[in-house]
Image 1 (cartoon, rainbow, N blue to C red):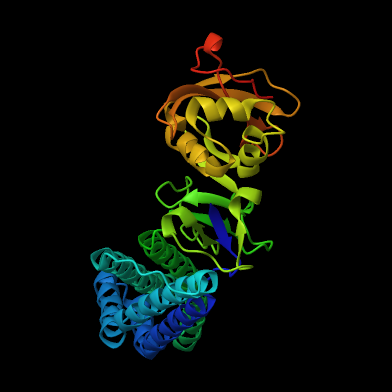
Image 2 (cartoon, rainbow, N blue to C red):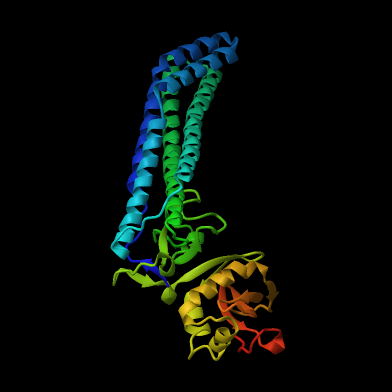
Length: 400
């Protein structure tokens, strides 16, 4: 049985704000360094706007001088390391808190620390490169501003005033970019460490959870409440990977794997309301409503005989329904897709699979899907075992 803890996984908003605050402060200090060169920049512009000789040489030398001063006085590495440490601590606290709430104890699993170090190394390198790009944006902005002031050829005092305005505008644009980097990079790091720690704790699936506000992008809004495998992400990646994504991965616990008894009232059963995502070649992301299998395909009263066919042909019933879904998920891209005529509800299609069940037998299984006419969402609508006359290994009723 798969269960969803009632204790929710939280996004590291405090870490994000801390990193954003530091990056903005970094830009502020950078602009202070630039402003300290304002008298020299104004003198050079005024002098060279009159002489008009060797403009490229003095301009390049002055910008390089500002760049050396920034590099000498500012260092990003300590804060990058601190942000990584805080994010990792947040993820560990989230995982420990959920497991203590669910089971009363923390699960103890060995971790590959080399993998965590690799995550840290790559993320650190990416952030150093991004901050270097901030520095370069400032230097390019200075170069452009100086060039424009030479062209306009105004008095010395006006040159000082104009350059001060240029620096102020440059600082504003750079601060906005710094904020974007902070939000994006903390989200990505949180996603990577959550993946690492959940997967290494034995958690193979998660529930996609959004912030449920108007900033959630449409593609992610429809994923809210859908479960994904950590080793099979959706096309644009796990929660947190897309730019400025604030979604999180709520762990989904398979009790057969953990062999622990959850405490009463601390979870909900995924079989009752869960939706599992699969990626189908040529179709894209598709959904399997778990209740479609447990309450219809394998239900003794609602299946119209399909449950008997699955039991005799493959050994599946309501008790191992999730195993049937996982079997379909593993084999979905080895099946043959047949499209049906468009209806007012959407585009129906069938995928024929050959599955081997827990009883060791193999049977032909037909899965029915529909691409919704409005949302374009693809979802499972039916599943049945083909009868011997149709090429299956046992009698079965056709799904609707």
